[in-house]
Amino acid sequence: MKSTTRKEPPPVQAPAGTGIVVIVGIGPGDPGLLTLRAATELGRADTVIVSRVHCPDEILAHCRPDTEIVDVSEGDPVKLAVRAARQGRRVVRLKRGDPGLACGLADEGGALHKAGVPFEVVPGVSSVTAVPGYAGIPLTDASHREVRVIDASEGGVDWERFAEPDVTLVILGVEGAVAEVAKGLVAAGRPDSTPAAMTSLGTTTDQETVVSTLGRLASATKGMETPALIIVGDVVNWRDKLSWFETKPLFGWRVLVPRTKEQAASLSDQLRGYGAVPDEVPTISVEPPRTPQQMDRAVKGLVTGRYEWVVFTSTNAVKAIREKFVDYGLDARAFAGLKVAAVGEQTAAALVAFGIQPDLVPSGEQSGEGLAREWPPYDEDLDPINRVLLPRADIATDVLIARLTELGWECEDVTAYRTVRAAPPPAPIREAIKGGGFDAVLFTSSSTVKNLIGIAGKPHNVTVIAVIGPQTAKTAEEYGLRVDVMAEKPSVSALAEALAEYGARRRAAQIEAGDPLRKPSQMRRGARRRK
Picture 1 (cartoon, one colour):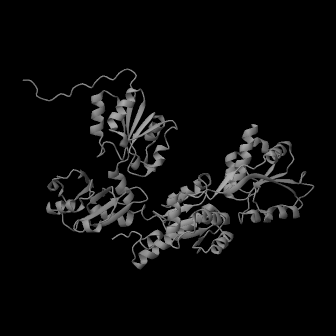
Picture 2: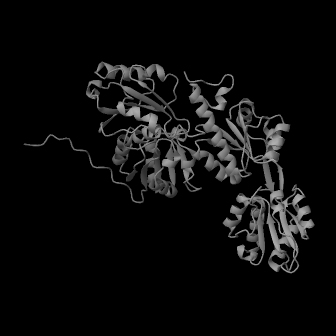
Picture 3: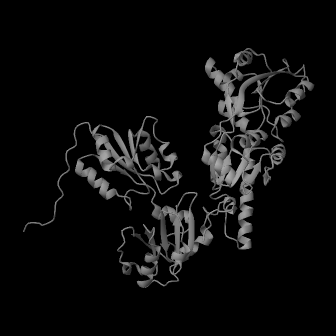
């Protein structure tokens, strides 16, 4: 008897020299959930096909500068991939979440098979497990060991099949259908008191989770953003104990960091660790000195032993000297025999990255004044040379030089770089600053206060103002700002920590008072409120 099983036709043979398509899952939203294999494939890609709207820039940062980025809005993604692969290119097709779970792998992989184009699959972290994990809801526990995943995006679900009370349900594609899902489950036999939670924009800093019951879920989640998923079952009750992401002290806070991207990198990373969304806006532009001869002579003096000390009062000064060294083919070995001072921990870290361990960093106040208080007097028996080199900005103050001169040192103040006011930020940033769109702004110096207000306007009165020290606080108050937070010590790390502590206290006070959890930006008139 002949078999009636339908056989798939063999794939079309790929032409010689055909490239390959790699279908890559990028996870549900948090760029940190990208797998190592996915990052490797992005680095190897000649062409990347992606929905730019749903892909964080941090993901595409793994691509080479010459990689062709093609948005799915330009045409059918399968046809785009086939065309590029037949040109011999290595194509990465990025899919949100995991390609094999409600993300179209069957359709796109099947079409590639039919076209005879070789392909591979790189699984991604699925929203099915990641979003509940970020919401603080385990899908299983000692009493609940079965999980069922339902794609409700096309409707027509037979809810009778999912009525067992001890089974955890994860329901995808619920946008606009929450009421129908809840009614279907209750009609199938699930009690309307069954715990249920809905999480929108999961694993991102816009994540929002509402915990309710099947009977009240539709009304409780009105106005929530998409994409979203629903978790149904007693495991939802764990959220009170296990919520870790949305309870971060600055969760979802939009924080303005008025520093260049290079200066702000470590600060922004620290803020992200507290759950914040940092926005880096340069307030100054660093430019080379108008006449480079001074710096050329200074570098020559470093090499020939003209100086006993070199003082770095900023990371920009370190960068300026380092760039000059590169021009002359020198490296950190040229500092052999020299004593090196750094004004604070950030500058010291920049020196260490250069290969130089500073001999003096102030233990107290990290400023020119703090360094001056700890500077040793000149001793002709111990110090064969009394000259100190200070490569600094063109607008640096003379407090440090005056103190060193009093101690018997001869200072050579060299302009290593110029600081000029940066160009105004884009209009949406300016509007957010003046309109209360930012939850907090961090001021790391008096100049950042003056320059930010000069190029973008005064922050709204709901915005939390955090400053690095007393002098910056004084300047902020002179410009009519209310200072809410001041770091215990003058470092950007301590400033971020102080803001996080403020956020934690504010959140605790709202909970204790029984008030809804609202960010500072949500306190302004006209801000969107959760119902």
